[in-house]
Image (cartoon, rainbow, N blue to C red; front, side, top):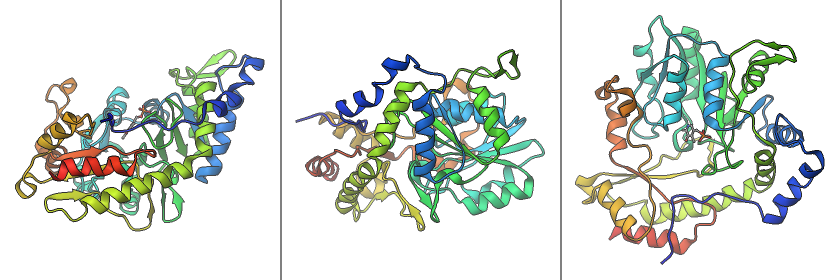
Amino acid sequence: MNNILVTRSSMPSFEEYCEEIKELWDTHWLTNMGTKHKQLEANLKRYLDIDNIELFTNGHMAIELTLQAMNLQGEVITTPFTFASTTHAIVRNGLKPVFCDIDPVDFTIDTSKIENLITDRTCAILPVHVYGNICNIEEIDRIAKKYELKVIYDAAHAFGEKYKGKSAGSYGDASVFSFHATKVFNTIEGGATCYKDEQLGRHLYELKNFGIHGPEEVSAVGANAKMNEFCAAMGICNLRHIDEEIEKRRVVFERYVERLGNIEGLQLNAVQLEVKPNYAYFPVIFDEKVFGKSREEVFEALAKENIGARKYFYPLTNTFSAFHNKYDVTKTPVALHISKRVLTLPLYADLQPEDVDRICNIILQ
Ligand SMILES: *Cc1c(COP(=O)(O)O)cnc(C)c1O
């Protein structure tokens, strides 16, 4: 039996990629905002139907430098049910993460608990569209306006999604995508910030290039976070096929729903109204008392058959040893409950229906 990993990166044909990178051998221009970088930016603006985008070497640097570009100080309200990147970006900016609990159905920030966490030091909210589930945008907007807070969405899971007909990248002051190899759309490694304010865009452009403002002026302490030409070329190729990829994911997703949808003790991901989904992940919450088997037992049973499901997100970021018990995990009980019971099942465009059946059979047996 073949190994099944939790995901498998989408790639164009070898020939298509070679054709795309050919001119780099003429120009010898390999990075620093070359023609591929510009082309990918233009193509993404069109595909996402947004006005402004800035590319980065990865999603993490996009979040980190977006926070820096906003010149924030104090506390940022966020959730611990996310990838390390979200929390690290806050801490590495010298900001204090304040952890809000999550909604038990869609796993995004529980907006009814945000206002209690606001202090006079709160400067921003950094919510995550977990598994591509879109946060409660209206409520977050209302709170941000009322308290004059910036909103930066971690949209790493939401590429290609729409909410109320508008791109997931168009909400908040900024929305950040990841184009990592494991994401729905990849540039090998990569990321982008979609933003509203042109001034912020100029700042982002400089921050990803050491804060260089002009040939003889360095006006900010930036990083090196430019997307190179080979990654941009991969993005140009992958973007040509993205709609087919998402459609293939839909087929896999629906087969899982068919097999696991009506099983007592299994909670599947919420279907959200007014969201055009991208079928990025297939999380299942295992309620051991009802289902009879724990998340750990299912994980082990799949691993024994060389099937790589993932405990995603586990552990919560507010329990990382890096933070030396600085945060009180009992303040986010729903996130803790979910993180102990969730397993994301393998999901990628070329996963075969027989493989989905095999995975489901193991779970159900
Ligand atoms: C992947 C991911 C990131 C970071 O993106 P990279 O491109 O890997 O740096 C940030 N947040 C979330 C929720 C992610 O899944």
